[in-house]
Image (tube, rainbow, N blue to C red; front, side, top):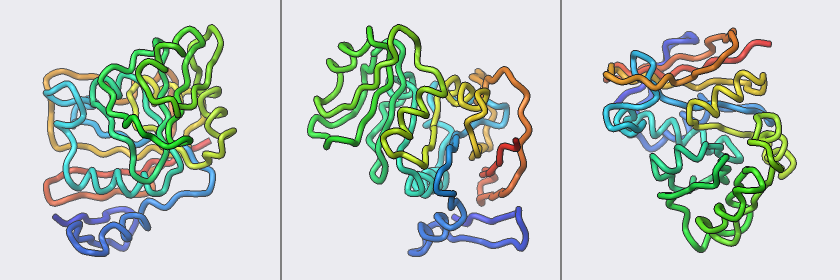
Length: 233
């Protein structure tokens, strides 16, 4: 499967099965030292989930290769608890994982019991901390936010305080939109699947208008698009 860069010029093509594909993708998705990205996939009609109710029916092998390249550029992957419950998230191979939850319900997670310290952070209200501990290994680092639901600024601050400078949020849509609305996001990496689906969960259900600049656009042989959008200030 080939991946062709359309923007910026000049065009280039990557054979995603080649031995050097991973290194070339990392070059295309290089980031600054301190950076907050959103990386998500959507259908042609803007849904964050496909016919199975998850993003798994929208993604592809090329999309997963790009996901891996972005994760290798990141210190930590940030997700909401709904993604953990619905999609059964595995631990990233090259980055730590941070989970945001209001209830502490992390049923269905695939976090290994022997997880090393520092690999997993959970941000939650104090009343949810005990429930989180019931679901996860003792090595989890729990950041309690008192009686309040975690907010975008507090989440990012907690991760930065623990030394995580390059953060990628992989959803869900509400968490991603909260970060974007709060003015904390530097870049949106959005994959567009060449599928239209009957039910729509908006990929970014934000409340504030945003201006973004297209800095890169890739296309694969199946017609999927992979865009990098820089958030303008």
